[in-house]
Image (cartoon, rainbow, N blue to C red):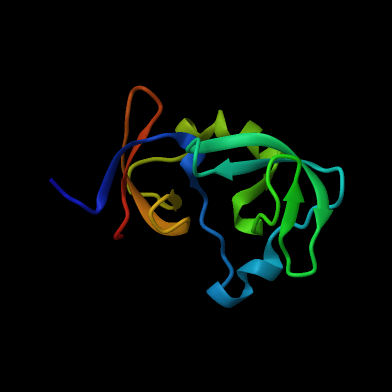
Length: 127
């Protein structure tokens, strides 16, 4: 068994890799304003849940209607949800991606090993 491989990863835990260097990622992220509908990645529920931005904090975090002081990398715009349904056709074996690691609590570089019939992916987290 390969400990670097994550089997049956759902589409909402993978995305296209960001093209910015590590130190520019926070500035390059989409910014949200009070009242914006967003999705928040809940580590407790292990999935994206609907939320609304209540306020933007000086440190770059957001207060949501479901949780305060949320970092930007745990929030996505609602429009991205529509991309999820196309994820199975969007990614193929060998594609470079980012995987949301609950262990590291952030997006990490990965590679699609295989696409499963149920719409999940086997992912190599040490590409």
